[in-house]
Image 1 (cartoon, helix red, strand yellow):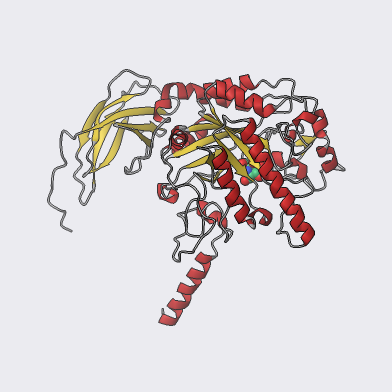
Image 2 (tube, protein in one colour):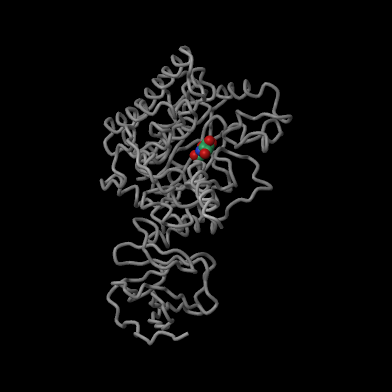
Amino acid sequence: MTMKKLCTAGMLLIAISAKLPAWAQWSGPKEKITEKKEIKYGPITPAHRTDEAMERFRDYGLGQFIHWGIYAIPGNEWEGVSARNGAAASEWIRSWRGPRAPKDWTKTYDNLYKQFDPKDFDAKRWAKQAKDMGAKYVIFTTKHHDGFAMWPTKYSDYNIRHTPYKKDIVKEIVDAYDAEGIDVYLYFSILEWNNPDYMSSEPKTEEEKRKSARFLAYTRNQLLELLENYPSIKGFWFDGTWDRSWVQAAEFTYNLEKELRAQHPGLIIGSRFRNDEYGKRHFDSNGNLLGDYEQGWERKLPQDYSWLNGNDWDAVMTIPPNGWGYMKDWSGLYIKDTNDLLDMLMHCVSMNGNFVLNFGPDGQGNMHPGEDRLAKEIGEWMTVNSEAVYGVRYIDLPLSKYGYYTKKESKLYLTVFNRPVNNRIRIAIQKDAEAVPVDAKLLGDAAVLTLTHADMGLDRDKNTYYDVQLPADFKADKPFVIKMTLGTAKSRAERLMDAKM
Ligand code: FHN
C-alpha cells in the first residue's frame, strides 16, 4: 500500500474514531483521549471516592430497581389491545402511537392518575421480599418521563396527593426499606413529556429560554424537596438527561450537582446526571468520570474488566428483554431465568460492579408473579452463597472457563456455572503471584476439597495451576461456590528447559 494510501486510511480511521457514537463507550474499551481540553464543568468528586458511603456502594453486589407509576395501570395494554410494538417500552406507553393505539390515548393516559389507588400496595411486603432476595439497595422511581410524582410535591399538581390513594408512596418505600436495612436511592427523570415548560431541543427564542429557565428551576426545586423530605436516602439515579435542552445547560447542572452534594454530604450520583460544556456525557472530554459511578450499563454488561478503567459502576437489568414498568403479558418474550440472572450478578461483582434487577409492580401494588418466583429463587441461592457477592472485589487472574472469581481479603471465590466432566476445577495463577490457593471448600458444605498443585510445565507459560477436585457424588442443579484461602505457595513451578522448535 503506497504511503499516500496509508495516510488516507489513517486519516479515515482518525475521522471514524473521532465520530464514535456515544454508545460506543459501552461496547468496547473507552475512547483514548489524545488531546486534552480545558474543562470548566468536569467532575466535582474524585473518580474514586474512598468515603464510607462510597465503600458501602462498592460492597452492595445486588440491588433492586422498581419502576412504578401511572404506567402500571395499563400494564402495556389497553382494553385488550397490546401496546407491544406500539410503545417503545411499557413505561413509555403514554407515547403509544400507530394503528393499534387507542383513540385519544395521550388524553386517556393523562387522566389515569384519577384512578390510581393500589389497594394491595404494602411497602413492607416489598421490602421484605427484597431483603429475602438479598438486595442491599433499592432504586425507586419517584418520577418517570410522564412527570407524575409518586410523592406529594409542592411544585406540580400531577402527583400522588391528587389520586384516590393520596398517601406519599416515596415515604412509604423509604421507611419500609430503611427498616429492612436496605439503602434507598431515588430514580428521577429530568425529562417530562407532559410539562409545558419541557422542550427536548435547545431553547432559542426568548420565550423558549424563559420556559427552559422555569423548567430548570422546577427541577432544582423538586430535587431539593426530595432531599429535604427523605434525608435518609443515599443517592439519586438520574435518567432522561440526553435531550439537547438539558445537555446545553452544563453550567446549571454542574452547579446543581454541587448544591445537591452540599445539601446532602455523602450523596451518591451516577454519571448519567450531566455532561461537560462540550456536551460529553458520563465522561468529560478528557475521559474523566462525571459522577461517582458509571451509570451506562443498562441491559448490557462489560465484556472485559479493562473497559471500566477502574471506575465503580452498576448494571441495571430487566427480566423481559426490555420494559421496566409493569407488563401484564410476558408471553412470547424471552424471560431471563434464575441462572441467567445469577450469571449476570456474578459477572458484575467479578468486575467490581453492582447488579440491579428491575421489578415492575402492577397498578394494584403487586409484583408480577414471575418476579415473585425469581426473587425467591435468587434469595435461596444468596442464602448459601452471598459471601461470594457482598463486599468482594475484582482479582487479576487469568479468566476461568468455569465461572467467575471474586475476592475478599485472603479469600478467593469461584462461582461455578460450567462444571467440568472430570470434576476437576483448574485454577490458573500467575507463576509470580505472591499468594496461591492453599485450601478449598464449597460454600454451604463442610467438606474440605482436595487441592493439588498441577505444575503442567507448558512451555512459555506464565501461569501455574491448582486443581480443586469436586466429589463425584456432589450434586448441584444450580451454580455453586468454591471458597479458597490464598496463602504462601508450598511448591513452586519447576524451571524447565525451553522447548526447541
Ligand atoms: O427511558 C428510560 C426507560 O424508560 C427506563 O427507565 C430505563 C431504565 O433506567 N432508562 C431509560 C432508557 O435508557
